[in-house]
Length: 299
Image (cartoon, rainbow, N blue to C red; front, side, top):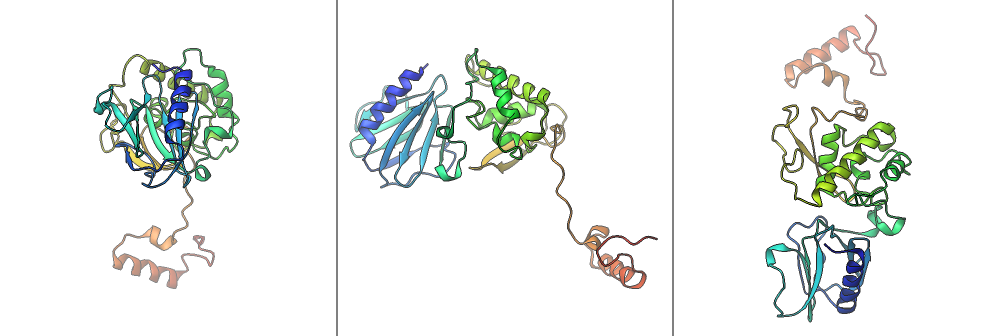
């Protein structure tokens, strides 16, 4: 279990070995985001809390959330790894060195100009893996979020609100709380914010001692919801885009208003068969079914 000082020391070692060196090999099987290009030069390695980032000269940043079980290790080329290869989440290679990230909880890449959740933009929120995390502070940050129109699904990945919630747990937390993932954070009442944060904290506390064995939303697209029997949906959402799993049938809490329907009123009245369209068109021409602005005329 790496403490924050261990992550800081790992960043210092990687910084010494990698900065100024060109990337000659990169592997990350479950990477979320763009893949760093070979030949680009490492510009910096930074750490904050249990997060470690590697930055390249084309503005690609590799972000790894090590959680309580992850670690970075540095090897000379040809040196035998001290941990099995199946535990490797990321492999970064230069001509002389191989840096390996084992058992990281989240691995993603982003460009700073398109990722407003970059931790350097402000003070990190409480780490919900910590049993003594300040729940009330997380709730306060949710309720006073700078942009109230941002979806709660996106805000849960913002490290300024709380650290530790990755893509898997944002889906599970919102499912458990029965909250619509696209609900604007500014519309959430205090009671809902409290429930979301407490649920996230409980799930992450459990993760400290055991791996998640029974997921209710994440990765279950097309399968029946274990609560209501509806079908679990999936879509890309956020910046950068991440897969979002949820149940449209029962996650209705604070649901956003439906998009206004600006389609042709004639098309809404009839089916797709040409004969139906012709019939409605004749009605409009002969009886003035609609006024000039598209509203239905009074009968």
